[in-house]
Structures are given as C-alpha cells and as structure tokens.
Length: 249
Figure 1: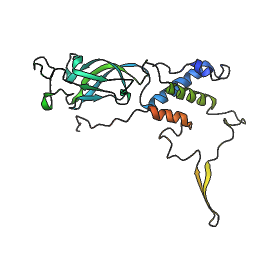
Figure 2: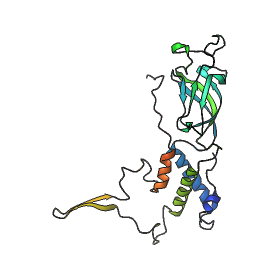
Figure 3: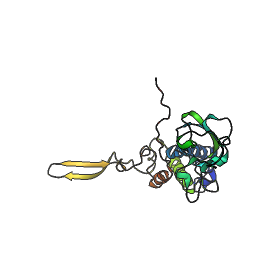
Figure 4: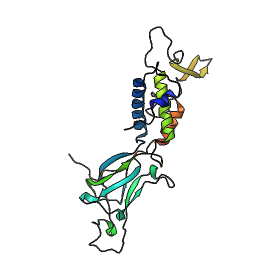
C-alpha cells in the first residue's frame, strides 16, 4: 500500500517540522488513509489480487472494486486459463465508466463452433456460465479505483490532506490550563429551535447539527462537509447477493 499524499504535501499547507515532526505527519497519513479506504469500501491504487469467488449459475461475476486489468480467469474449477475470447472485462475509465459497475461477462466467441473446441458449457441453451459452487471461480488481475493514468483521484487526495491537517492541528488532549483547540468548548445543547413562553417549554437542537443528515458512522470523525461529500462520491455500492450454496448445520 502506497501513500496517497506525502509529507511534503502537508508541509506545503504550512505545517512546519518544528511543531509537527515527520514521524507524526507520516503516522497521521497512514491512519487517516486507512480510514478513507474503509469509509469508501475501496482503495485508490492498483493492487494485484487473485480472487476465488463462488459461482452463481449466471454469466457474470461482479467485483466490489473496479477492475484495471485481468491476467486470467479459471472457469468452474478448471486448472487451465479460460481463453480470453470467451469473456469480456468491463474496466473502462472513460465513457462508459465501468468503475461504478465492474464485472466480467462470459460470451460465446463462436456460436456455431464445435462442441469439442468450446470450453465446458452449462446452463440454458448450452451457454457458458459461472457454475454454482464454493470458490470455484478463480480470477487474477489488478484492481483499484484509479484515474485513467493509474493515479489516485485528486478529490481523494484533497479529502485525505484536509483530514490529516484537521487531526494534526486538533489534538486529543491539551496541557492543563491551556485553552482547548479551536476556541471555547461548544455547548452540549444546540440552539433553541422551539420555545413556548406561556408554558415555559424549550426545545434544543442537536449540538453540531442534527444527526439524521450526517453520514452514518462518520459524525464522530469529522464535521467537514467537503470531506464527507467526497467520501459519498467515491463510496462503493454495497453488494448484496443470495449465497449460491447455503450451508446447513
């Protein structure tokens, strides 16, 4: 795993080495990059992986992270690599942009070909499918959400830089008697949003804003709306599927 930003990037924003040593900055980059990857549910650099996935009796395998390139596919537990003429890889980073729906689809290169030269077909109409099974499909390739030139998206770099600076300049604890970072401590209660003078009733809002519109799981990390919006833009869709081979106890 490589760093999406550098210590020099942080220094360029005015954080000098006297107050913020290199080791502290590097640790912050690694910590908050790990958070960003977890929050987006995908990474933003090319990583080599060999996947063993369940077949689902369909002609398509969806991957949770965009595909950059595929070295080989081994279909239905076969030890030999499937001929590249028999599958298509959806990995475009231009138009159409396949990063939001990365997948591998089986195709019949020669509909009229000999049954002796075709790979094992199984399914309706004799078409090839990723046959139902447990980890019976092997895919080796390079995966990651990157720009066409293989670089980290600029917005991800910006979100990480802002997050690192925010955490470095807002320490968890301060010396006794010193003012808290960022000024006075915010009140536990938010602003008054309703008041009844006759009944002497008051209703306070949530301190820092209502929780409902905040991104789930991120309200305690940062309140920077730009960072939260970038995470929302690059968050991978949640993949839901019914297991092809339910296990019974």
